Every structure is written in C-alpha cells, then in structure tokens.
Image (tube, rainbow, N blue to C red):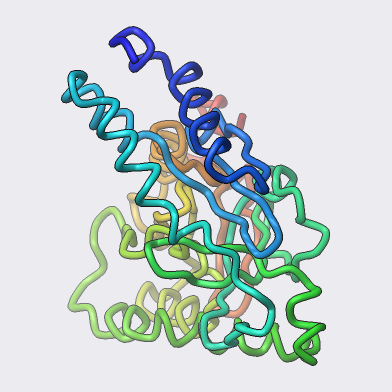
Amino acid sequence: MDLGTLGDREGFAERIRLQVASRYRATEIDVDQARFSLRVNAPGIDADLPLAPLQHACLREPGRSAAIIAEYIASIENKLAPRPAASLATGRLLWCVRSRTYLQGVSRAAELLTRDVAGDLIAFVAEDLPGSLMRGLPRDEWSDAGRTDADIRGAADENTARRFARLVTRIRDADRVPADGWRMAGDPLFQGSVLLVPGLLAAFVERAAGDVLLGVPDRGVVLAVPAEQPGAQRFARRLLREWRESMNPCSHQVLVTDGASLRPADPERRRQGAFVLPWLDE
C-alpha cells in the first residue's frame, strides 16, 4: 500500500474492510466513515473496530504498513469470535448510551432492549467483552436462555450502578467544584452510562447545590457543570467543540438534571450570556 493510499481515509478503510472480509467470510462488514471504523455483524457478533490507530501506525512506518496491517488482522481474531446464547452471563450486561442516529445504523437495533435517556440520547443493553469491546445483546439470546426483559433490565441497572459506584463517592467527597465542572473520561465504551446512575445524578446536584448541566460529546466522555456556575455560560460551546473534534462523536445536546430526572436544557436559558452565538443551537 503506497503512502497516498495510507493517507486517504476512505481508501484505507475500504482496503482494510476487504482484508477483514476475506478472512471472515460469514460476517457483514461495513465502513462507518463518520467514526472511521469497521462495523462487523454476524450471529453472536456486533463489533466496532476503530481504524484511526491502525492508520496512524502505518503512516509512522509506511515501510512496514503491510506487516502492521497483517498483525492487526491477526489480532482481531479473538475479538470476532461468536458468543453463543448459552454463554450469556448477566454480570457482563450494562446500559450503553449512544445517539439515536448511531442506533439507526445498527443492523439489529430492533432486537435490542432500549430505554430513552433524554434528548437525542438512547440506551441499550450491551455485553461488556474483553479487549475493550462491547456488543448489543439481541433479544433471542436472553429469551432462549429463559430470561425476561425485566431480568435483563434489572441486571443492566445493577451492573451499571456498580461500575460507577466509586465515581459517586469521589463526587460527593470532592473538596471543591472545579471552575469548569467535571470531565469524566475513564471508560472508553460506557462512560455515557453514568447518566443512568441515579446515585451519581443526585451526587452532582448535592455537591453543586443546584441543577447540573451534562453532555456526552464522545462515547467515552461526559462533561458536567453546575448550572449556576460561571462556567455554565461556556458549556454549550465547549460541548460542541469536543463533539466536533471527537474520534467517536455522540451528542452535542446540553442536558440538565435536578438529581431525580434528566431532560434537555432550555435553549432560551442557554442563550443567556451567549446570545451572540446562535450557531450553538445548530
């Protein structure tokens, strides 16, 4: 592969798609140019394979690009191994928060157990897999295992709350509220799921002594700032900037919580102090 092809995102992605498809013939592989990744679907498989790290490695060492790509193709073998329904373990189930647009692009979206979050965000039950992977859990896997929707929903609630329990404690025990609020980016796949942890929303509001603005610009990033803090006036612009620069963009919609509920922020209120920037609401 020549250097010109290496730098062409569309051409690079298609070359990698063809190489992966040649090895995994029973899978459906599509290029997601917006996220610069390959989306792989097959019975028991729903994986998203980012291509940016691979492209950067090839550009750093163009002379080794063929070897680097071969190593990459070999490294994903375990990640694309189908998981039968019999192996379903509810301890690995979590709520995964993504935009509605993202879910519309998932081929088996109708088979997932979902719940509304707020605004353009929606959550679905996913299985946390080794190697920083996750897959949406199709309905037939839990129904064939004798599980009900309530069983799966309850397991996802419990596991998601447990995953972020330490974060709840850290927010409550913080000495002060940062001037620009909080930036949480410790979980590359499920960070947005903090929006579904009631204890965390309550901790934010308790610590801020009032409503808190929230945003999920990237699937691995959540921003939060007290609504009455000066930094709140810049929050929409900050959220939009991170969303535009994100490798895995999620949403640029501002949400607000009172500790018990989550809803889209009032656009009129957000314009206060920033009315000269109407493009923030685009």
